[in-house]
Image (cartoon, rainbow, N blue to C red; front, side, top):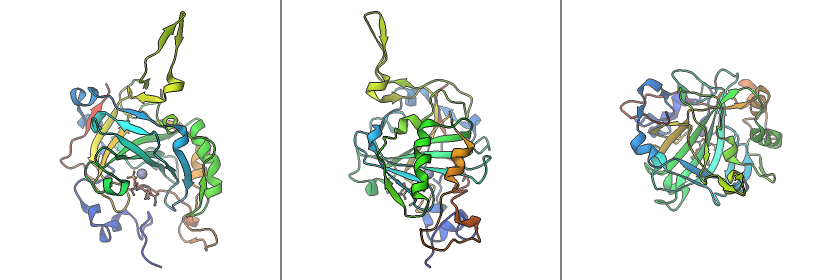
Length: 307
Ligand code: SG5
Ligand code: ZN
């Protein structure tokens, strides 16, 4: 058949540059985050807190593209803004995940040389400056990806909604509609463990109110959140072909926990379509180790926000 990129020894990351010259650029992702080298940029980053809004109804379809699982959204009512993105409004296009064959690897970014069991990516595009996702994907400030590290531990409730649906998209090109709401903001780290050396929690944008002596928490209603956790940010690229250098990366310092069992469900997805023969020579055709290794940061600046 025709040449398709993947993560195998034959068509893996080191070969991508032959068909996708951008993969050899100087603004590529992922990178290893050297926490000591991050420049604190409180003035610029904290003056406008990172904030997001994701209605659970925006998650529409779950797909197996043969490289990962992916949830496509309708973007409706979603928003990411502030922090390195300043006043531009980005919309959520899709979210997907990268993982390993074992719990000791799987993330694309590493922190002080350490890999995590997985990495969740929420892919957004700049609706202030561009008309379509495709147009934004070609622009240096077109995309913003929120990255969340996955560590093995307790099962994750929201991730379980996805894990329970994965058997219905076991083969490449399988796709189902999502009927039970899946809330991407519940996949972000709240009071989780730390990847770096900072703390904090997420806050609801609307403050609590006192009413008749009671504290009214608007969290459940407003659905709009801002970050107090801290994150690292730098300018990079898509981590898969065509490796466009169009991404502002925002990586949470805190990770989320998912269970070993939940990761095993990810590891059971197939790289080949239903009805096709299994390419048993390589890992029985399952999707594992779908991460690109880190590339040099070069002379790019890694900034951090959060103490
Ligand atoms: C995922 O990561 C998605 C890409 C996404 C890249 O592997 O891959 C697939 O779903 C396989 C087709 O999503 C798409 O290709 C959607 C059509 O690429 C994009 O979002 C740009 C098209 C890269 O995203 S990442 O840098 O966050 N890892
Ligand atoms: Zn990704």
